Image (cartoon, rainbow, N blue to C red):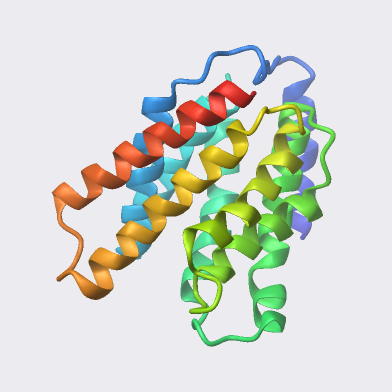
Length: 214
């Protein structure tokens, strides 16, 4: 927590001379999708460096971060949170996720919020992000339709409500991409490069829809 406080102070100083215009840049949805695909690959390979480098590109493009060092620091906070989630046993109760993952994810969203000058609540964003990830781990809630509802909630928290169903479509396509990866891994002899190409194509369509809603 002390380190986070120091970072927030340095970030505030940096923002005083650096402008961010995340809402004014047209999204490079192909690059964003590609970076998330690589991030997912790193996550399942338990390769934190691959997760980190992919998230750097993701946040630079998704939120138009001009300062590379700031993007790297934000990516690191999210990488730590997501890898903590990956290291949490699937059968863990909600309390375990709340203790081991949620604080790191909340802090990451807090820094992102400060960086881009957003008005959303970082606790709500972190909870919504964690909710859909946990839901994918349980048989009764893992279908894309159910995941998409939770993911749409995250999109509305981060980006507002006036999206004309583009967020819903984006969430569904992203949830389908995640479910397809799982099906390949669990039932179809693993995930090969062709399968990752399918995931990337679905994510590309997802972020195209998201860009239409912004």
